[in-house]
Length: 163
Image 1: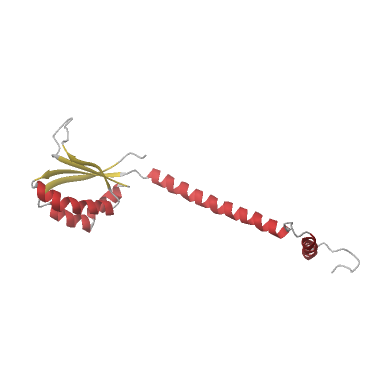
Image 2: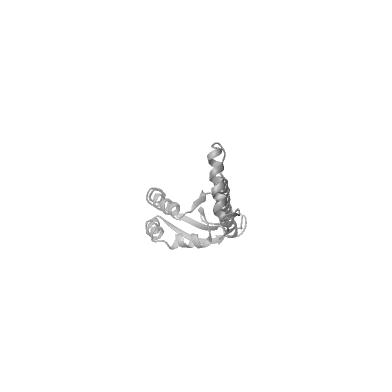
């Protein structure tokens, strides 16, 4: 303990003098408030840096995974049934699986080798694994059982180039 005649410079004496100066200067910002603002800024900067880092990692992961494509050759035997019954079912399943149409249609042009089927569909997925998951899904299989009444198909998946 310090003696009664000497000035003590410990944490509590600093707070006492701060309180005295706060009561004398009503409009000034206390040291405690300055420290709290600085701490808040540091915490906010840390949270922002974490979010930015997480976004960068997600972006790098997305770049590292090449897209997957399902390529389907279709020989339609009943155009009306295929269009009215099968297409709405399969389109719903493709969308639900995260796929999107890249090519949907007829008139393929043979450049070399055997001619493809009259109708070609190309679907894009986030990866080949997601294309395979779509192809193995119960919803796609149920829709395919309807489609098999109106067409025959040949399908395969390929890995795209990494963007």
